[in-house]
Amino acid sequence: MIVLRDEKRIARLARLAQIFSFLGLGILVAGLLFIFLSENPNVFLFQLVALVGGFVFSQIGLHFAHRYLRRPRMDQVLDKAAGKYARRDGRLYHYLLPAPHVLLLPTGVAVLTAKFQTGRITANGDTWQQTGLGMRRFFGREGLGNPTREAEEQAAKMVAYIKEHAPAAADAPVFPIIVFTAPNIASLEVKESHIPAVHAAKLSGALRQRSINLKPLPQEQYNALRAAFDAPAARLIEETVETSEE
Image (cartoon, rainbow, N blue to C red; front, side):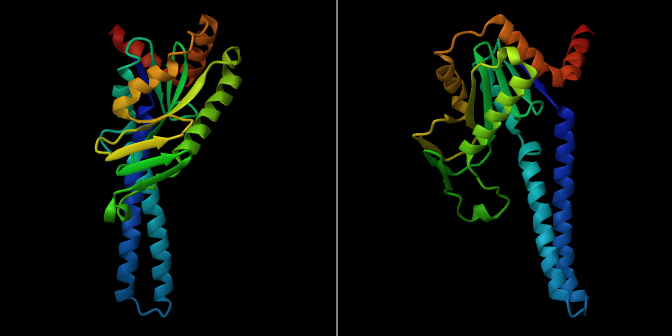
């Protein structure tokens, strides 16, 4: 399987995660010290502003940190998980297309919506819940949100991208799969969901089941998809070729 990822974007956003996290912490500490060092009658107003500002910066840093700093990163987990199924004929794109993680297969396009959350995760239709975290849910956590809606939005973006950049393959199958990448997830129970949701360890099975009834794409369609997906990664492909020739 060929993996193409925007390493520069990952490094840039990882750095932003550190900056926003330190800024958030600094603002919170400054607001706390201001109470003891200032005699300004509006001290509590300033403290409130610092609290809100510090929280906002911390949440932004947390958002980026979960995606670009934590090890292994979600894209790295997907490399291993998807490679078990698409070892020879897959092309996996990270942070290069409208959806963060896209797997091009001979039978279609899999849009992988990666989630890092842990605990006991349940879904009934499009309704999701995350439990079993205890007090941890208040510290350094980002909410689960609605993975179904997120997966639908990412798939829709890819459909629009294909129609614009690869019209010859406009009717190629595009199917989303929700993938939980944390190694220590307690449980995952999904009922009556029209979008499959699996742990990364079972992604190969989900890909096989989703693709089993699909016919290989006509060569013209596959080539059009590959060209459209490779275009944003042209620099990466050139560097890979140059490295292999040295």
